Image (cartoon, rainbow, N blue to C red):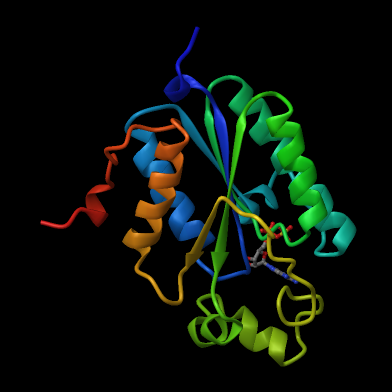
Length: 194
Ligand code: ADX
């Protein structure tokens, strides 16, 4: 019999491009790696391999999310903490993945990485919002394509209002409350204050 800390789970980050999914998921992955097996599945990376050639149509986004969810479930089933970072804009598809995971008795922790569109446009790390607003990228999430916020995520982080370390701490607390990690956070060296 394994205890809660040895069980796999899925930690799913959803939110618009540039909201901070990659930053937070990498940070949490690094922290989890100090105490347990963990894998990070990032949408940008999946689109170079598992989901190579897929477009940003609704059908292809759903395919991408289902594929990532499938791999995450397989990993979690074998005791890995599967961390996912993908826009995953459609509620029904996220719910479908959630049900597959929880149907196996595994936890699905959804983190909504939220920021105002204006903050994302101001930040525009990849320069994509500028191009999308200029009409150069059709179907760009939040500009010319939908993003359906999760109605009941386990955690909401406001990356336009709170520090990365605060968001990460709240996510860790949520995992700890469910018995998935110890209460004491295995802090990443970069976020450890003196
Ligand atoms: S998802 O909708 O299928 O879940 P995914 O997370 O894999 O998306 O990929 C999102 C990344 O693709 C964005 O961070 C951005 O860099 C890039 N991208 C390119 N075109 C688009 C688009 N039309 N809408 C959103 N993101 C896009």
